[in-house]
Each structure stands twice: as C-alpha cells, then as structure tokens.
Length: 194
Image 1 (cartoon, helix red, strand yellow):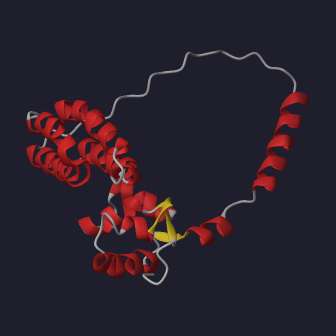
Image 2: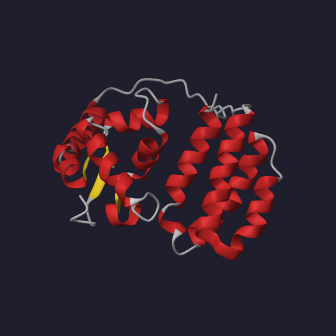
Image 3: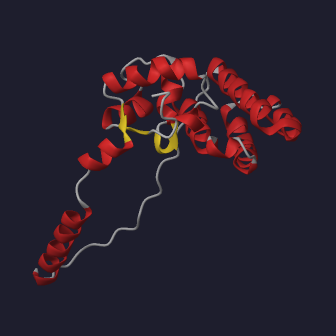
C-alpha cells in the first residue's frame, strides 16, 4: 500500500452500510478512514489527514473485512454501461407500446428534515472536530470560523456554522481535498448521534 501512494479505494455496499448505520462497530479511526475512501482520493492524499502508520493498519483491515476495494476492482464488478443502456432502450420501447392508462397525479412531497441530535456530548465532539480541522487546514483564516463554532450550543446552531466552515475548507489549498468527506462526517454525527 505505501509502495504506491496513487492507489485509490472505494467503499463497498458493506462500507456504505457502515457509514449510514454503524452496524459493524468500527473504531473511530477506522470509520474516519472509511469515510475518506470515496473512489477519488489516493492513499497519498488521505495520508495528509490520517497518519501513514495508522493507514498501514486500517486499510488492510477494511479490505479484509469487505468495507473497501481497490477502485479498479470496483469498476470490474460494476454492470457494463452498454448493457444498462440497452435495457433502458428496451424499457422505453415497452412503455411506448403499452396502452395508455389514466393516472392520478400527486404532487411530490417534501422530504422530512432529519432530526438533529440533542446529545450535548455529540455536539461537543462535533465542535471539537470542526475546530481541529479549521486549525489544521485554515491557518489564520480559522479565527472567525472557530469563534462562530464556539458560540454554538445546539445542533441547529452548529448546522448553521457548518456552511461557513465547509466553504472555508473547500477554498483552502489542503482542506479542499477533504472538505466533502468532513462535511459528510459532521452531518452524519449531528443527524445520527445519540
């Protein structure tokens, strides 16, 4: 793994299941590594956020337990695009030749907003994570954002601060590569923290 910093890993179905539901009891560092495995970032880039010795233990564990695969392996397992397109064309023809039926049109419903945690320990943990990442990736630009985060006492207030924090990370040189993963992690914690 360390021999090739250009390797890219992807989450498997089991990996996505773990991110959304925490069904497999991963340790927090294993979970953080799993979140960063997004079929786009190389191991060399991920090593900027997670120490290499930790990656050397965690990546083999995640692979052996079916949470991630190499990006090339995932592409081989995917359904070929041509076969999918052919099926879509067949479905289109079947729909056009089917007799028309009257239908009741119902307006789309607004998706329910996820409930945010009210657990003060989770809120403090997320605040700490946001402040740490702001310090690490934003330098002097972090002062205003950290001050805003520190003034938050509820998950709702923190969600309002998340937008500024995420935008600043996206605009920073080093933080840009991790901004989306960090945002996913913060939202998950605030929506699913008990």
